[in-house]
Length: 173
Image 1 (cartoon, one colour):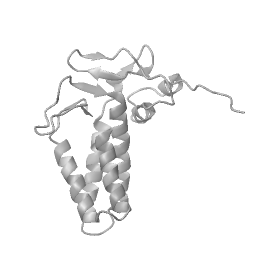
Image 2: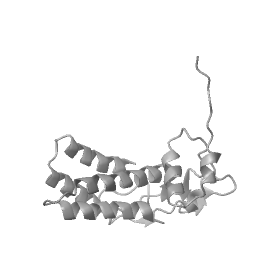
Image 3: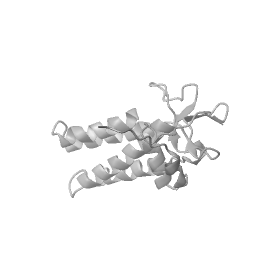
């Protein structure tokens, strides 16, 4: 989530006139250079890394919410970069960032986070024990809905999953 927000904040800083296009592009490239050195599991980034070495910190954990947020942010970043990649000095670099962002998003396999018996996404995955967390996200109005949306859009989980998410209604007068 934090990495995705940082990427989008960098683009927003440019859009708001705080950062020139060249500097925005260089910042995005530097972030992707670091991402390229970080270990992943089935396309997902782990929750915690050492800031100096980029080694995965224990426990090696995949968070469904953070992965869903990052995947959605990467798709949004792709679109922003393609929109900015008009003929000019940064066009080729922005197109490369866009494709790399899309590649990372599409590489995330959400199928192993899906608890088929409940038709819901688990809260996360413990790599050390090779187990899903026993709890699942079951509300549409939760922080996990972007993960559900991305997982369905990528065909990693069935569309029926969306309809397993609760939609509690309240009456307002």
